[in-house]
Length: 203
Image 1 (cartoon, rainbow, N blue to C red):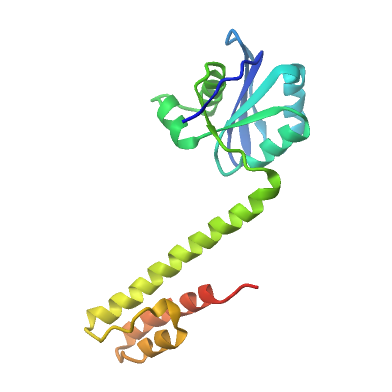
Image 2 (cartoon, helix red, strand yellow; image 1 turned 90 degrees about the horizontal axis):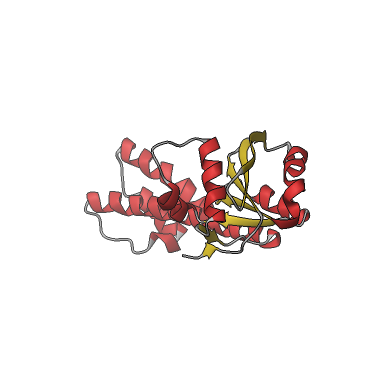
């Protein structure tokens, strides 16, 4: 685990959500200089709050699904941005009392104290490919579950193995022909279109 340890005059903690975020700015002495909730669309207001401290400021945010726009905003305005590793941050600043206001303050304090666990901030130009590969992995796992279910049905009825169904559309079609019970056929036919579509090349 790596921690952020570059001394700054000012530290901004952002507790980020889909529509809103809570901003807390503190100085080296942990004095709160700004602490309020903002809409994510109000980027001008956010920048106006950061502007007085921009010359020696770091913005810290936990790694959630919504951090891209904040990282890009900071980059475009020459503001240092750090991303917190979500799992490690949970273990460090977890507590019984939690809300957006408290969490934003805790994030700022972690950065100020050198206890902010760093996650990698993917460059803007690399994120689309990473997200596409993650999506492919998601669909691959779904397809594997569907194929396992087809193999399970075949085994439940003690039919001879058909080998790797993942490699052959013909084998999957033959599997459906082994069964005469309407309900079993419906179960197989529910899986089959998804298996076939997930194997088709997308170009």
